[in-house]
Length: 441
Image (tube, rainbow, N blue to C red; front, top):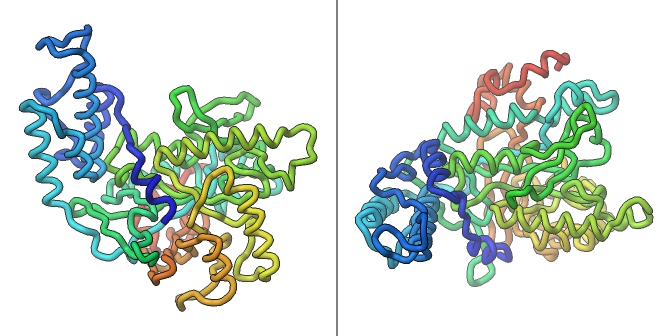
């Protein structure tokens, strides 16, 4: 699979100081993985020579290696954690090595990769007082979106229940013969893999002024954050949509991420991507938009997201119903995607069907639509099924996985149905934002 080499080459370093490490470790629910005694702490040197006469550069290297080892172990990469300690000496390193080796021995493989839940969301509502009174879109926002507060509560709940974020290439990839196959996910007993995704991460024009983030940008710290314009018209930066909120959560709870994985961002192209108007088809003749500059900025954001554990999926260029689309329309749409979106986000083998409009029921794929998508490089396909906590299908040619919508409609259904699938992940009464009722939803 094309993303595999890039995915595994990424080294996730969440902790940049001993103080930060202590804070993050203290928030982790996996105390054996993430806590360390004071005797194992490593301090930054205050001069060019450490207290024992060791050159400062060597002490700093040792410090970074120990930090990286602890982070890798917290995120279940036990082999990588031990590799970071190779060549280091000291009683603290010996104790850490022993602890990680024990965790590695105790970890178990997830029993069935076809039974990995997948929750999906749309753009997060920042200001419900604007979104829920929008003349044209209030009902749609209430039905299909959740607020930032609701999303944070969902994250806290699934983390408390032992779920760990994984990406598709963590559980399946092409083998040496080019056949798709499941690969082991190794976690401590009681931990469970979970995929999350966000659809339509384009910040569409119709959402402007309705209480949503306007785009993604690279903040002063080098991480991706959001631009948001408040009700007074003031622009501010912060965690106002799913990636930035998840990144913030994982910094506090590194055990929530499997080896640095965060989730999937599904993109259309007709209004551009990530809040940038990158479509030549739509904006090429607009004198007020420098499409090339928009592409440059979007590409920088996309590269940063990929480096930080996010992966991209096609959501078709035009949010196309693939079930109903003719071959002519689907072919044209995939061409637009390859021309206008792929150059920005890179290759992807993930297809998230708009509307959940799959090209088959539970029967295996075949036919011209599948062949077109397969020829375009798609190996993973995601529909919607909120009737069961998890569903997957593997053949030599592809992996399918069902997604569960988390939105106003599904939460309303769960409030009146004790057997609703959302109850496996969170208590709706504890998650739901009071702003819904305040605005009649």
